[in-house]
Length: 238
Ligand SMILES: Nc1ncnc2c1ncn2[C@@H]1O[C@H](COP(=O)(O)OP(=O)(O)O)[C@@H](O)[C@H]1O
Ligand SMILES: O=c1ccn([C@@H]2O[C@H](COP(=O)(O)OP(=O)(O)O)[C@@H](O)[C@H]2O)c(=O)[nH]1
Image (cartoon, rainbow, N blue to C red; front, side, top):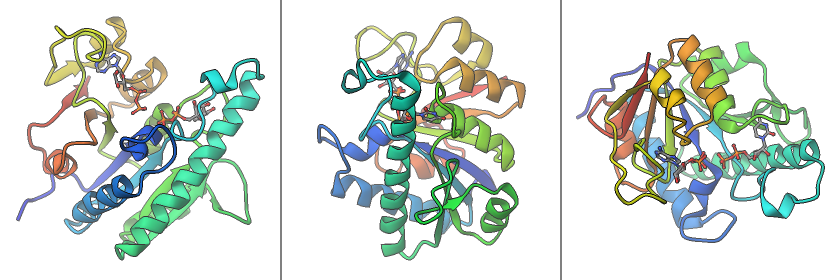
């Protein structure tokens, strides 16, 4: 039986990670696999907060938003994360995982609004808290929301589950010679403009001394290994 290395973590799940092999939307098999992985770490006793992305449904900077006012497109992107949050909650419920969704935008008939002390209480009770609607502000990303909520709830680490298995010397989807770092400092990641996460998120985590682990969402068991402090993905720290 593996032992967790952390008591409380913030998991950033990209919207695109929910697409699986599809072109957009939520892939059922993918979301089921993800909920199994989440169930696995919750049963280890780890307190889990999740920030969910929305790129699978809408991205403010996407071609589909071309010609739109940027802030309007971003609000649409934030609403997309609420849909993903509800889908994830529903899937987790089927696994017997007690979950609450809190939204940074007030949509009271649909989801609870973000109230920090309430979120903290849920975490202490062992409930998974899904933070939706990003930061609630246009011109930000859900990566920045992950850094912000991670700091607010006192998570020991931000776990970024994404399409790549770590941070590379260059974008591995464009440069076949790129090599993966097992560790990297925030300053180096920012200076080298490694775009796996935006600079605002990196800077916020750096200032709060909140480490980040970047790992692949498509690798079975990777989340559990990361939570148990095993060598997986890339660790970004001060
Ligand atoms: N130096 C790098 N190392 C790893 N991935 C990188 C790097 N530079 C750019 N990327 C790209 O960043 C992507 C992950 O970032 P992003 O698409 O914002 O993730 P998400 O949608 O999971 O939040 C990867 O698919 C990869 O193509
Ligand atoms: O604080 C935030 C978080 C997200 N967004 C918008 O929501 C979209 C979806 O979020 P993101 O691209 O971060 O999702 P992911 O890449 O994780 O699927 C973004 O493109 C933005 O348009 C925003 O405006 N403010």
